[in-house]
Length: 211
Image 1 (cartoon, rainbow, N blue to C red):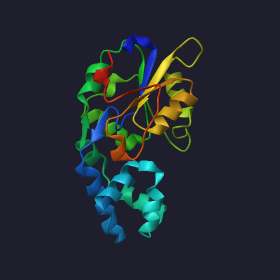
Image 2: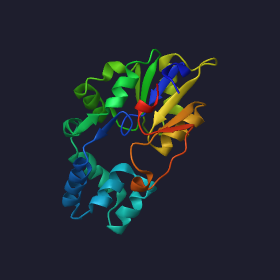
Image 3: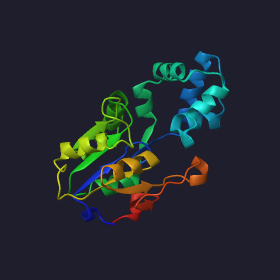
């Protein structure tokens, strides 16, 4: 699969183009637990951060924590600058995306107040012709609406264009298919480690596998 195979490219952000230092999720979740008077294991912190297997609420119920209270506290604790400082760029993403001669966009679940500092700190904002952050108003992947918004921004939301969305999560694959796009699963981690196996139109461990 080559860069020239598609008229436009869409990407998920976290886990696909960038990722977080391994210690950061545990640090944040531990701080949330301290405020709530609850202790979370490293594995529970990983589940809560990444939503592995869709069992976040199960972890919170087991610890006797109301999900709404947990996420309210989480957003009080986490600071955008701290997350940006702990975020790093995948080298293979840079070498691949910067050579695409077509419209390029990002569709991310991360909110603008967290997304913007990451893009600025890593100096990658100008890689993308549009950045769409999912919300209750726009919908959340696998809802195709935010993907379709990105396509509209790129001027490719009409017949005659063939596009693709690359992401690391089942919701990315679902959003791509629901919007009529091909889907590339970027499998950065061992499926057994994350407790999920994702099927896309193509699976790669990094963009270095694509020309």
